[in-house]
Image 1 (tube, one colour):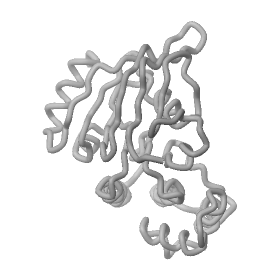
Image 2 (tube, one colour):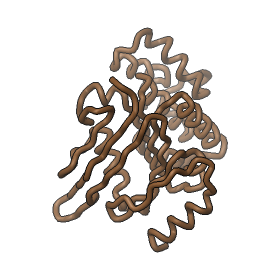
Image 3 (cartoon, one colour):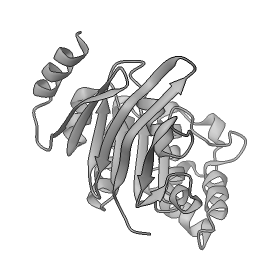
Image 4 (tube, one colour):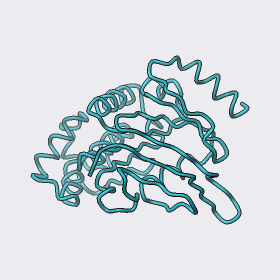
Length: 234
């Protein structure tokens, strides 16, 4: 499967009489780090769920690497980090990663687990139950879980929520390293400053419509904050 290129074409999502997405067009190319901003209820998480194959659009279509997002091969190539850790609290950190490695038929699952736990600085907590880890450690373990199949696409929904300064700093460094390895990243966040600093592009979704999409590599966060405030009417 080719890398890169996520496409949304006129994506609409309705829940009864309520329209969460109103004809969204979006293209994310290989190596893009897209930060998606927007007020609560703008449709950001709905859009991400569609791109991850968790939810189907009411109309329009979404593809990843030229394939429908519900194709099994696409799911293997998408790593998702959301409000739900998708970890098993009664398994250790190591056992969680080994479980997912086996699920995706990753060769040498034990070795893969050790490699990933070291990359997120949890190798010294590998034997701890996931349910006993702090919020920051749980989020780092979620990163390791999401990277088990070496995905080309990383989707993140409010990843900095509840993280202390050390965990947030480590998390940002991990994201930068993933981007430097050529991963295509889409991150939802309310932290405009951190998001823009990491991004190559910033988009704003408001009332289910894409109303802003610009290259923001090396951009000043204050400029984006001003644009955001003007768009959402805050």
